[in-house]
Image 1: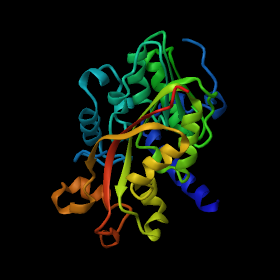
Image 2: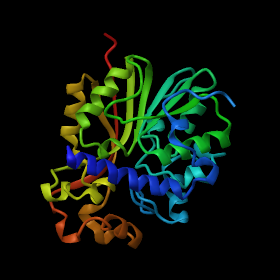
Image 3: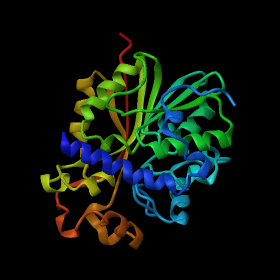
Image 4: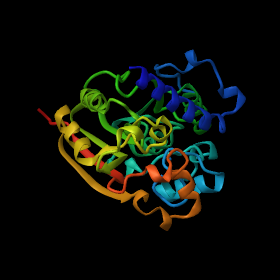
Amino acid sequence: MTAHITLKEQVQERYGAIAEQHLSPAAAAPIELLEARPQAEVSCCGPAGGCCSPGDSAQDVSLAQALYQEADISGLPDSVTLASLGCGNPTAIASLQPGETVLDLGSGGGIDCFISAKFVGSTGRVIGVDMTDRMLALANQNKAKLGLTNVEFRKGEIEDLPVESNTVDVIISNCVINLSPDKAAVFREAFRVLKPGGRFAVSDMVTEGEWPEQLKANVGAWAGCITGAIDQQDYLQQMREAGFVDVAVESRSSYGLEDLDSLDKASQETLLKDLERSAIPADVRLYSARIVARKPTA
């Protein structure tokens, strides 16, 4: 339990610091204003940067542009695109439709929520859940800039979602589930909140092979979306055990740990920030995967 708390604190500090770079002073409101309640109407696998890690501004822009279609991110402020920390684009595989309710697990600065809002329209609804206060503040700041009324952000943990059962049409997530020390709980909660027939579409980090225990204990590498990644087959099996069907990896991209010398300097520095090169096992491969599934209709 202590290790999990330490890991959670490390993750919150890492992403809170990233959010702080894009927060205006007015957005740093007391967290009670950002709790999980509806409001009144009023980032990875590319060579430019690292998953879940901030680069410089030019790198982050390139990362957002690499992951998303121009039409998707057009009109989004820099405080959205520069805070993008994903490893893919889950909205591209979610087949979102007007009127649907979408839930984003670990919504960060809100980029995938805001893109989803375009697809579901004014008759739809998008809920972002995040446990980091400063990320919630940033997401709400960005929401206000965009003037959106069909998006809300809730404070909570993805292992214990502040969402009612059987109320969500589609769950998305972008390079977040790998950060959880209890992925089985995440999948159980996702299954619970989905409506019968609901869809699950995420981008996440997975491996072929298992990290040694000493690397799993490296909280910096875990918080950097590296050593929290589990073997792909284990990941998919945990989803099936939670009740999901039609579980599949739609596509995946290598993250480069097996051939560091082929990567550009910026990517090497990102990957090795929290890991010693000599500690990376030769038989483990790291991937960014696009994973889909659904909840049975009955």
